[in-house]
Amino acid sequence: MITLIVFILILSLLILIHELGHFFVARKMDVRVDEFGLGIPPRIWGKKIGNTVYTINALPFGGFVKLAGEDENEVFDKNDLGNFANINPWKRILILVAGVTMNVVLAVTVFYIFFGINNFRTSSLPLLYDYNFKYGRVIKNNTVIFGFEEGSVTQKAGVGLGESIVEINGNRVFNVYDVRYQVKDKVGKEIWVKLLDTKKIKSAVREVKIVPTADSKGNGFLGVALATSISIDYGGSLISKVTSGFQHAFNILGYSLSTFSQLISSSVTQKSVEPVSMGVSGPVGIFSVVGIILSYKGLDAVLGLLDFIAILSLSLAFINILPIPALDGGRIIFVLFEALTKKKVSPKFENNLHKWGMIGLLALTVVITTKDVVNLF
Image (tube, rainbow, N blue to C red; front, side, top):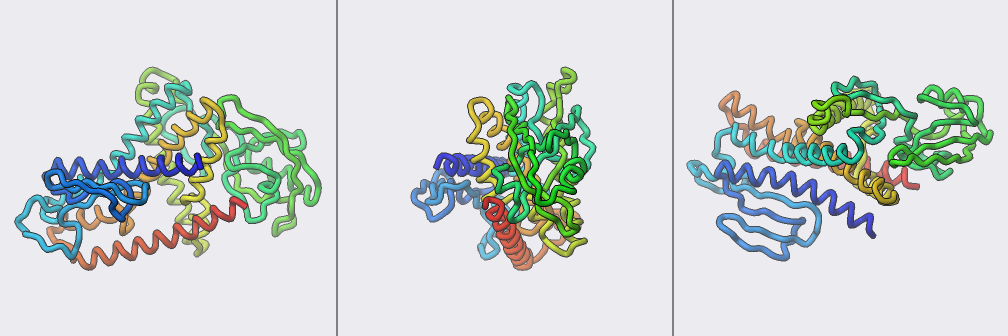
C-alpha cells in the first residue's frame, strides 16, 4: 500500500509540475486558461476564480490544463487574442515547451540535492550502449542486470533488477563478455554468483546458486539482459560542483537520445517493437522500481527516491518533446510549420493525427506493460 501511495505521489508531482509550466506561461501570454484540474475527471469540486475554473477530480493522479481555443470544435472569435489558437505561433511554442522545461528544472534541482548528499557522485547507471558522456568523470563499475527473459533461472533464484554480477564461481567478472565466458560451458551445472547492490550507500554483497540453461547455440545462459554499470563523478573542481545538476541533466538527456535512437534502429532492423519495449518501462515497471527503493533503509531510500524522481522527470521531458503526434513535441511541429510557412494546418487533420498518435502510444504502453508484468513473475 505504501508503494502504491508513493508511486501515485511521484507521478502526480511530475505531471503537475509539467502542467503548471503550461499554466503559468499561458497566463503570462494572456491566454485564457478555462480549467486547471488536480487529478483526472470526473469532477468532484470546482471553483471559478477570474476566467479559470480550478477543479479537484475523482482520480488522484496528476492534473491537466485546458486552454481556450485548444478544442477543434470550439467556436470562438478569431480576433480574440486570449485564445490559444489566435496568438502568435512562437508564443504558442513557448506555451507548449513550458511543461518540458519545468520537468527539466525539477530534475536539475533534485540532482543538486542528491549531489549535495552523495558527494557529487551519481548512483550506479546501466550503460545499454556505448556513449561518450560530455561532462564529469566516468567510473566503470560492474555488470548490472536490467532485464529478465521469460522464465529466467536467475530471476527464479531471487535476483533483482539493478543488481551487479561481480563474481562467478570465485572468478571476477568485469563486463558482459566475462559473464558469457564464465557460464558458456556450465549448462545444467550449479554455479555461485556473487551480486552487489551498488544503489545503496553501503553496497550489499550476497551470493546465490544458479543452474544455467542452454541458449539457441547450446551455450550456458542466465536469462538476463546485462549492461555495464557506471557512475559519474562531478566533484573534480569547484566549477564542476556548481554546475553538476545541469551537467548531469545534459548527460542523461544526451544518453537518452542516443539510446532511444539505437532502440528505434534495432526495432526497424528486426521489424519488431521488442527492442523498444525491452529498453523502456511502463507503469508496472516504474511501480516495481519504487517498491525496490522503498525496501532500502534510511539514507539509501532517500537517495534512491531523489535519483528516481530526477531521472523520471527528465524521462518525461524527453518523451514529451519527441516529434510524435499527441505529445507536446508533435504539437510543436505543427505550430512550427505554421510559423515558417504562414500556412495553418487543418485543425481537423491535426487533431485526427493526434488521436492516431495517442492510439499508437497506448498500444505501445500495453506491450511494455505486458513485458513488465511478465518480468515480475
